[in-house]
Image (cartoon, rainbow, N blue to C red; front, side, top):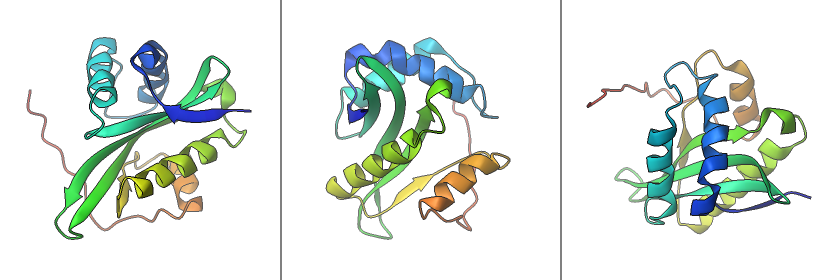
Length: 149
């Protein structure tokens, strides 16, 4: 039976592999192992920034989800951005994603978050249906980005 816990620095190589499979299907991102190593390490080593939860089966990591914390002035409270939700291709279709998402939402509630926001590709209808089944709703807000490098 799979378990879910917070990621440790020793998990980073396996998490980089999961991110490579995720970024291969996303329009705006490409794998960059060194960038992913830096980002994962920053989150794992700074609990005030957020948390990475991992789905384990024995020693194998089957999935991950990343929660980043910020403060909403509209709500006057902590909120979370859910990023990098991915289950290994060979472990999909078994309910692992639902289990991981459920635990991430519980973790966010326990951390005092009043809202969880996520982004998904506009053409990723399967992901949109998955999140809708878990009561996420499309927002009228339009995400906009400016790369600063």
